[in-house]
Length: 441
Image 1 (tube, one colour):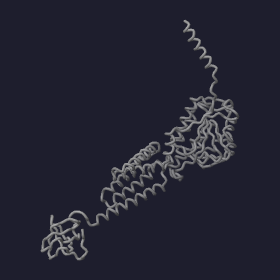
Image 2 (cartoon, one colour):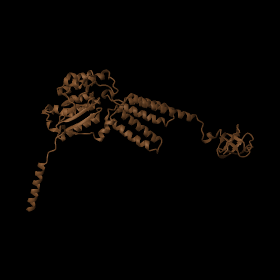
Image 3 (cartoon, one colour):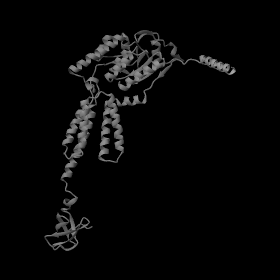
Image 4 (cartoon, helix red, strand yellow):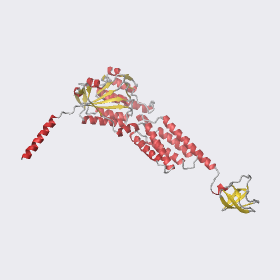
């Protein structure tokens, strides 16, 4: 009985102590996007919203500085922001930063949009992978779709619809002060504390419900308590690999490394490095919008180039391989629909290097075909040796360090130079060499 009372007393003391413990201070959640919009960034934003909800954060701040990026990734981020259970504040910062192209849509989709002084927003017209205009019916369709998408977002958040459409159709770009004046964004803020101060008390639509932002309690010592989230290692790696130029170079490095290993078995290092590069390149292709026909042409070109090194076609297969390789590289990504493409200078640079290598291989093959054999019976014809016994007409000669039975049509004394004119089984036919410079061995 006594033990039971003691146990109950200890339990009550524990509950009282826990009740007396201070509750952890609430903090704002924050992430930084500095670079192009790609699948890794879209995944990062999706996870950040989920973590902010789990941490009971009053809001998630996305500090944004981007020149643009992939249309599918931008749409995924916009969908997550519009459906977010946590208020999302997009802050274009620091000074000198910008929200270009895809960044316009992300900023418009935020519950609260703010910009730092000296920043800009706009130029959301869809373009190709090299910045070129997408012409024709396809370009018109993409422009119309993007403009209507921008208009829908601006209307949903009560922002300047007319400007949102102009940003797409006319590529207009404005400063932070202009954006706040015409209600593209809500206000201009010099730092995060200013953002929180101006956003506090604003009414926003979160999940279809009106909610007032209560941010006054997250201050501590004159500063905002913020919990920053970082990309996972896999996301950081994917963020680098999502550059089509890097993915392309990794694939080429992988193919080259494996080719060296196949043609020179046992070297090991090129094969290991090539295998790693190829896997990383294929990982990048998994997240980038790949054109199947372009990939097939690229693989066909690589196969033909490898075959050229083993087949004596004097460059014919190699020329076809280079043509298929270049076409596959140009069509590797769905440029018109997503704006992703390998830089043409890089494509032609790699193609030119391969062309030079294949011409060099072809030249070596032709030269080897024309060169006189130095082994076997054919290699003995024309060789110069010395008679070891008198040839009248048969005797013994020393040619290339070996003794041979030989016969000739003329008398040759021992010690005189002889030249091989034919090989008949294990017997040589010789004649007196035109030069006295015998091979002494």
